[in-house]
Image 1 (cartoon, rainbow, N blue to C red):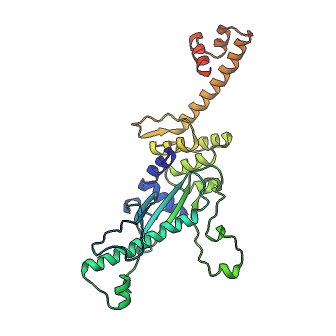
Image 2 (image 1 turned 45 degrees about the vertical axis):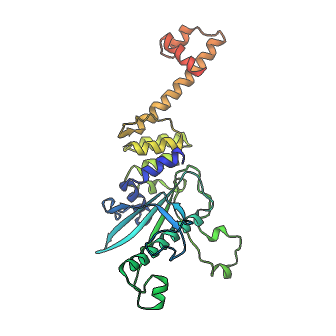
Image 3 (image 1 turned 90 degrees about the horizontal axis):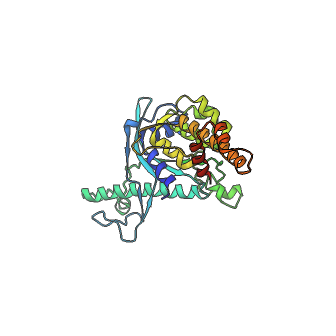
Length: 314
């Protein structure tokens, strides 16, 4: 796992950020998913046929494990009702051109795990069901499974040009045939496709992270975003995502809790301008057009400081 994958996973595990992503996706930014009601779950999904567990609930040796990035249970309270669901996030620093298949596997494995867990509980309780069908499947007529919603969050500046559905991955375009082929669409947050109004719908530092990624290849628009955004004081984990994903050389102390990203980027840009000016003056000194003393004066530096900067560039 690379650095970008590690920091994005750690960042999206934070309940406030996780909830913010789903509040944007499902509710257009309204605060419905409550961070306090989120509970992190094991992200391991087991590939095995239904009923493959033994009588003790153990997995067979040939079971294959798949790992999601983040999976949490949530209680959604709305209109006087409470719904229990599972929410999963897949972080993508690069475009994955088979994402619909990847996600459908994760979701199917989660549903299969739920069926297997329910069947195991029935065996533990000593229940054999009320019919041959219930006995053979281990899943009873009145049993219910929990819905899963998986979100793909693209941590990249380039627009996602991969397929958004299973049908888009198929060569056939015959509608009569496709009507009988089950489709599966992915839910995607893609910085390049978000408008300024969309960014305003995020209530956590996820807005600044996505905005920074969106404008990372356009210095002018990034500067405008930083200038217009009053909330660039963010938690260190968010700043680490910006640094790792956009290659912005931010100085983030290991024990830092918050970082002023706006000031950090401004200092970086000023430093870049200084290096550029020193490089030009050093060239003039090399060509014999300026003395060290004159060049240092123009750079507003002492001679020793100027010579030290020149050495950094060489």
